[in-house]
Length: 124
Image (cartoon, rainbow, N blue to C red; front, side, top):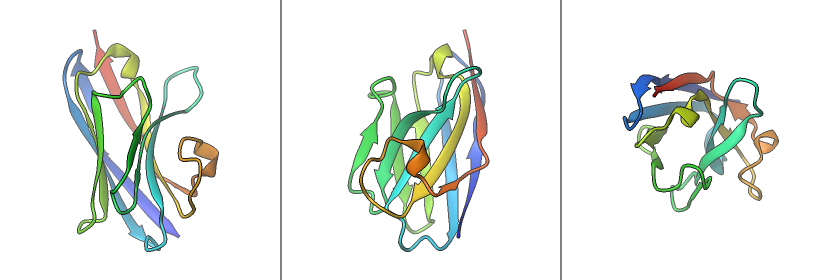
């Protein structure tokens, strides 16, 4: 089992920045990806970004590329999502997730473990 505890998020104005954290514990040694997803009201959960556990490779949705940065601190076993130049359309509940096998990194159903979610609200 892997436990993921999220922190960060909140309310910010358009153009502002926030950083989300995702602390992992438990059986993390065979994890392959950490991903971030988000779900806005009335919409399906969507892929935001992913990073390999070694932090060698990163992947982004087109909608956040150039504004968001995903990273990992292996010493702390924590992942981060730095969000800059936020827009009202970024408003959603954000989730971190991990999986212990490779392949498609952008489909939420392929992730084994999930954080509790954190609200991000961007006001116009």
